[in-house]
Amino acid sequence: MEALILNTETETNDIHRIIQYFAIFNFPLTLEEVFYFYSGDLNLEAMALVLGDMRDAGLVLQSGLYYYGMKCSADCIKEREICAARAQQLLPRARRVGNFISLFPFVKFVGISGSLSKGHAKANTDFDFFIITAPNTLWICRTILHLFKKCTFLFGLQHWFCMNYFIDAHHLELEEKNMFTQIELATLIPLNNPNLFTYFLLKNDLSNIHKISLNVPEDSFVKVYEKLFQRVKNKWLQPLNLFLMRLTDNKWRKKWRKKNFPEDEYDLCFKTTENVSKNHPKNYQKRILELIDKH
Image 1 (cartoon, rainbow, N blue to C red):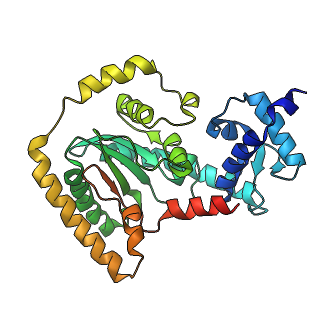
Image 2: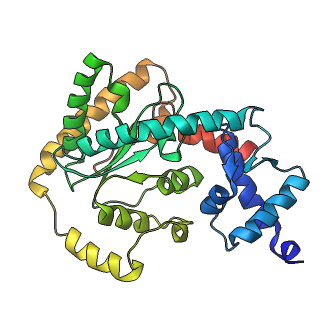
Image 3: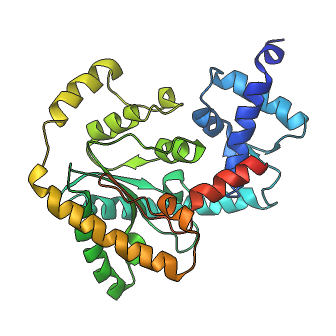
């Protein structure tokens, strides 16, 4: 009787959306993983009952510990387990690379993002990093790191240094709030500065924030940390920071126009502001959200 009460249309739709999101990547999920990304009030036992009803209704498929969408291939579980084993091998190396990046000037936080942060690594996978910089230094920091990255091409190691998203420590709230950004933030693997990471997650009000182990009292932490951290300004670096931002933006726009890509998509693929740098030329966010809406 409890399952019938809990299994509402909203809950079913929310859970189905999570599974369909990962089906885009041919990625089956365990019960615990579905529960982690779910923002509602169901406990783990109730979640298992709802998933059982969804399986019986033909909304999702189940094999052993895994639940997956209809769009997943027949060998998705085998592929996931192979990729999971590879990810475990690569994560220590990615951590070392990320810790190395954290030593560069103006880097305040580094987190592993992308597929590796989800325990999934295909052959020749990239190491993706999300970086928070000191205030008014984002474009200085990014320029230094990308000048260094040019050297890694000499040794074929450029795929270890995919630094595609930078954000200023005084402007931590993302403009885009959707399923893509929620899952990316919820799966970030922090490598340093746990206080700043906690502050960042709280500022973005993740729907499943209660599932993430923050190890701090939320209410008092934000007030105290914000007072301490907001003192750092670096205003004297702002002119150089803005100059490098405009220089980079001009370069990217020329490349974008040369490839005849839609002009109206540029700002989403290459978010270029004083406080944010996003370099996603393939516009994965838009493509993934469109695929979800079709399911």
